[in-house]
Image (tube, rainbow, N blue to C red; front, side):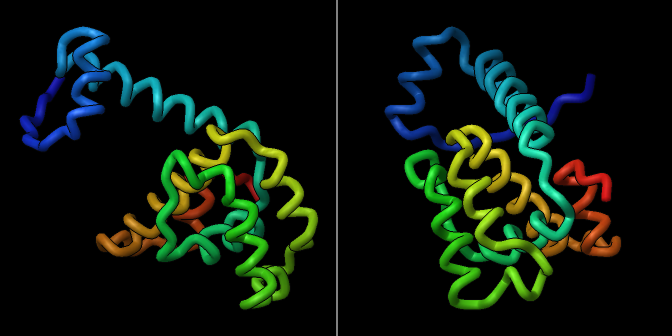
Length: 143
């Protein structure tokens, strides 16, 4: 297994949380592995269509969500639909999507936000594949 050495600063609160769980490196590896696995499973449970994923990616572009605001993903999407007519742009039943997102728990919302951020990161860092292919792969969309 290849290893890459990284250096970063931890906020005191996060450092205390990690230390309460054991050794620094092992806990960060374990917890990130758990988190990313949870995100992947959660995305599959939500089961978004390609058009719904495209609308969400469009809506969250430039937005900053964290664990305290992720449960409001539905509201951000609803605003983008009202202001920018993204439901028409992506041929999506906007109200049905907003209702679907409103019913999600925080983990599902964070998984969707993470996927959207990964799409934008891939594109901004030179991924030259067709945008929709990047979305399909990242969101696990089959249509």
